[in-house]
Image 1: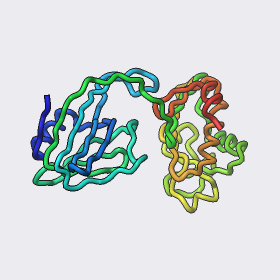
Image 2: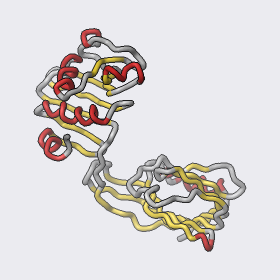
Image 3: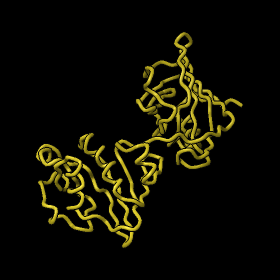
Image 4: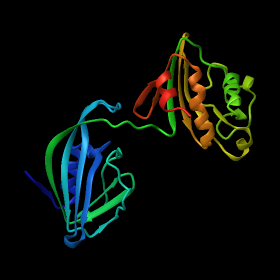
Length: 257
């Protein structure tokens, strides 16, 4: 059964009942300029996880925006079915005016919106790798010292140094040896020109294991690529990138280097 909305207030109540499509998806997008209409297919997850190759269930709606008076046109490649949106937002308007990121931000102002709920969609979660974050858990070893990280990157051909945010170069012995959360590694010659680097966001030594969360900020691609090789020295490791998990053998065989 169709639901028709002709103002922001009523449409907003419907969006609120559907969580404003936070972490939602745009599954389809078509524009018919001849009748000033845009067709969208929106969805959000109601069951399952975000882990790669697991099953999930999406609640799906077809959305028809009619009487479109303004919109941000999308070119090919500017929207993705796999992009997890921040949600739909409303802007001030006498009629209906909503925005979404797909990932390009778009705006649609129209006189009415017609909603139809479609059958739920069951699918496998597609794998994706992060270009900015890696999380590792290592069993059977203690948290490496700051000096060890420098040695391992040096073996990969990189002259790196330790620094804090916007800080100057620090000797490895000046860095807290087992609590270097919040510190960065950066190419020595780039420290005066940057404020960040390879960020050790979280480090935890558990005695006979450790966890590290790493992020790249103002870090060159070659250092990030070498990090993928450096962590292969650990033998009993779980590596999380994006929504994927790997052991040492899987990471080395398919994704490193």
